[in-house]
Length: 191
Image (cartoon, rainbow, N blue to C red):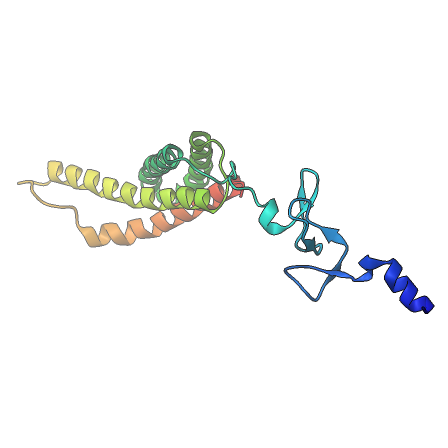
């Protein structure tokens, strides 16, 4: 028996391990749960040692998972507060940018409080979508109020406020308000 064959026979674990997801990478780490070899890129810190991506991913993430009640309440708060902010912001013209930053932060805080301080892409969609829908509803509400005032002043009544001049003025400030509100809300959102 030669020295080389004796070393090979004495050390049965001389064969190097390779990551199960990346077979070209040699590793010395195994998953703490399923005992598969994992490279540093695939390793996640677990409660006791490293885990692979499938064993380390939580089944239920409380920070990004919503109940139906939280989702409905967050959407309702986002749309209602976005409508109020949009209605006020659209009446102020140039100053809607300042109102938008202020309102966006308040809307984000209110939605986060009603949803239990959730995070993630669903929360971003609820918050930013609510501001966008609220701005459109605020513009519709603003147009309805202008039409009612126009009918009370106009002789004969039954007339509508001219839509084209309203849209050209309101669309510009609506985009400014919504952009400022979304920027402020995004700054408050913790993804």
